Image (spheres, rainbow, N blue to C red):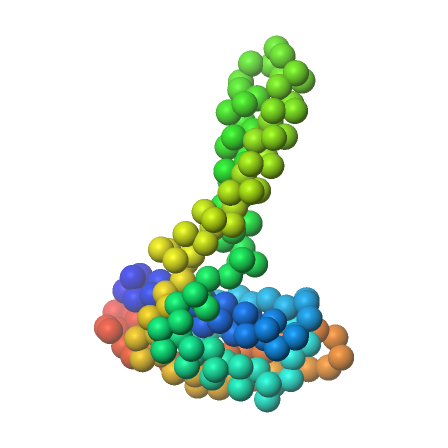
Length: 172
């Protein structure tokens, strides 16, 4: 059951990334982002519902055609988390537990943080490919795109997806 839910989120995460990538290619300006769930994903940004429907369909077609690179985003939180974790681990290793001489090691610790940030994108992209996105859509369909927060301010849309059942989501 857990594997099925994780697979659903990973597919929706891939489609969310592909959608944001195509919106950016069409000139959509930030703020723009998304959040994936087992039932679909949310898109935050100034985008018209009709345009979003069109781009989501294009993104799904691209992924179904084998364009797996659409599923990997340099703007993903996975990259930020990976870079932060690596940087913090390096800085802590450099600073060590001994208080004596810590101030002298501070510049190296800051360098460790910078190295972590630099490694964030390549490590994060690898994590996306392996763990947080799934570019093979496996029959995923877009059910509907709904505007939840229309207006001039950055809006909120929900993209609801349907995925073939590999097994029940909940035990009966």
